[in-house]
Length: 96
Length: 439
Image (cartoon, rainbow over all chains, first blue to last red; front, side, top):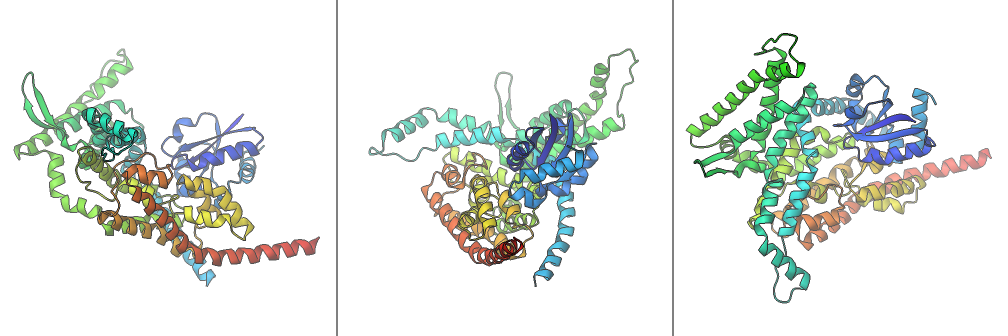
């Protein structure tokens, strides 16, 4: 399974999102949510990082630390927890 | 009009994001914040111990449960107080360790030796020796709680910064032949920096010892006006409005919690210690005050709005209400903030800033006048306000207050929500009409 991680302040609200994305991917993706303080310990084999919109200002700082693509989740998808749209965003970036 | 507002908010966003970035990536503030959010087991355990020791007053008519509880407290008061004093009541020790650890993580240096050094520094500087005889050693541990926080943070930063600088510049690095194992030469490399840091700590102790005090006591007495100022109505209003302002741009208040964390948790630890000692609680602006009374439903106080959304005439808003109500109940407001959206939505600018600020003012005044008891325990910021309000104060009036605040928030949101709903309903109707025509 391909690995994607979500990063927000405490990994709390992205936790809800992670499940939705996994469902939308038909379990082809393994999506985990982490707090900003800990995500660096979980980078093994990660193909993409998605950042919660509430800390979108950290995207450049996170990108500096990792080699995989980093994007922020669009607020409107985040609000309704639209796993499908974010899944689409992921495969647009790293391929299906 | 809305165009002007859009340009205005877009302009502000351009300036708010870099500020948020600066504040939240500043390495010391960042380490302080991470230390505070990582100490959940400590604050929770201390909170439970305080709650257990806070049995409501009983008389002969009380029920069997309360009587049994009160007997338990009477028989185990030392145990319960000790359990609190050494966890939440010793917050500064753990913050010192936490800030050291996270600052080392920032510098990507191994944290073990720096943690040992700053703990030693804390013991040297923040404990007050009373008697140091051979078989009786007594020290005062008055400044392990919130009163020692500034000192703890200072020691942690001083230790890591100087340790890091000395290692970078190879201060006191003893060159050993290549045949010596790497781990051994590492141990030697930290020898001189470690001794220098401990010597500085000892010198700091001695300076204040000669003055007949210790550093945290000195700071606490001399900065008393500042500490008082952070527990005032004015400060509560400014802090709340500022946090809400960041959130209006959909920016997490993490950027501010490096500063607010020590203030709120420090106040909590003092209140917990006072509660355990059966004294009057000194602080109002604490972490539980913030999470249970000010931001009800998460930042933006969105629980009230989520309830309104459930019965919205707009399909979109109804959907968001359904998605967002459960997280909001557990103080997670992101779905509502990003879904409605409240973020950068000019219609909601006023109520978004107003609701939490009004909550802060009303709750502050209620606690100041003694109408509602002050907070002394934090269980988890995710605990729904209604339960959290009771368990953090042991006052049923706190629950009434939270319910009243939710109603007030709903009233404040209502006119703006209705205006926005009208827009969306009109939009949805015209979209439907288009769809029918196209068919």
